[in-house]
Image (cartoon, rainbow, N blue to C red):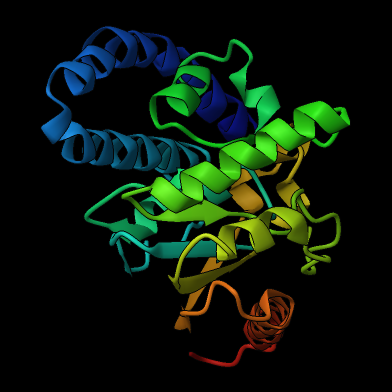
Length: 255
């Protein structure tokens, strides 16, 4: 059964090369030359990519993945999700309808990775780097602030900042999230995933892809309508809701 995971990953990576060329040579110029088509074109492409990856992971790799959920792709939508695996981004993307999310992403993905590195730039993802010096961190936070204030598509981030090691929801790294909440009112949705964390690292993901039995729940909407309000209390409320829902999922409590 382990061979299925290796075959699925090889097929995904091989397909990334021609898809990267399509993205660079066709989609990128298209949205620059015809900006009124930007949201529609980028939405369809990103949803296709999420479907492409999850299809290989499930149909070839043998993973049991949940159906996408339904989050309105409206301006002023903020999506928070716990971080268990590399599948979290496709799960977020496929759950947003009518638009695409701008996702706060690690800077390391800007390095030359076929398709992914150019996608970070094309979709104008804000980037973070835990190893950055104070000057670089200040610049990155400014990028998150500006993106949150000006975005006309949903905004998404993983407030734990890193993938969990035990499946539980870890402490939130609140600096960036507080900055996002200060920029504008938001309609907040929470995605809670489980069943992926034991396959978080690539070597475990490959050898045990067929063992993944993923679940996904949606909470919200929650209203954040006072950018000058107590964001710390609101963040704790969101984290508590996610923790409680994860425990409900593991206890087998239905939605």
